[in-house]
Length: 49
Image 1 (cartoon, rainbow, N blue to C red):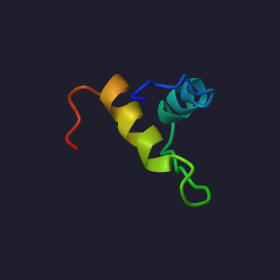
Image 2 (cartoon, helix red, strand yellow; image 1 turned 90 degrees about the vertical axis):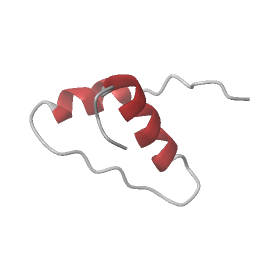
Image 3 (cartoon, rainbow, N blue to C red; image 1 turned 135 degrees about the vertical axis):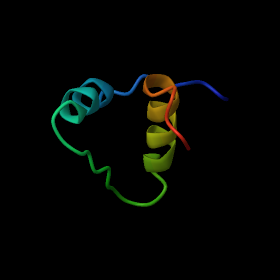
Image 4 (cartoon, rainbow, N blue to C red; image 1 turned 180 degrees about the vertical axis):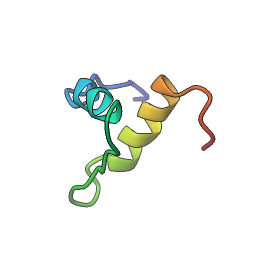
């Protein structure tokens, strides 16, 4: 059950982060925090959590 889903938003987030801050919003229980945590873990190894 601990599978990492390939998210279609990842390339768009990476592209946008080159120029600006990215805000993730949406309804409750859709995976916003999971997306952010996985994104930081996979793309920003030196970031403080």
